[in-house]
Image (cartoon, rainbow, N blue to C red; front, side):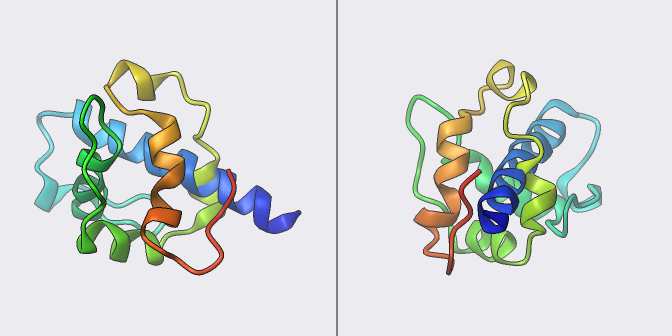
Length: 108
């Protein structure tokens, strides 16, 4: 049960973090602060994998960033209304840990 809770929070935060960095055109990725132990650069590396209509497979950089993330922190943002408005598909974001073959992927 606890793993399920942490999984939800992880993916939610990933989604929110991606949105924040995408929507903030004045912030450069190299200067962006991380969220939930994921760097701004790591978050941006995951964006193509959570964007419709043609999401790509997550990159090694994206998967590495997610492997160090605070899952409970990230899943807290799963139901954010900002994600779809910024082109982020929450369903795709939730699938990232599994696609990255992280051990014990969270269930947000």
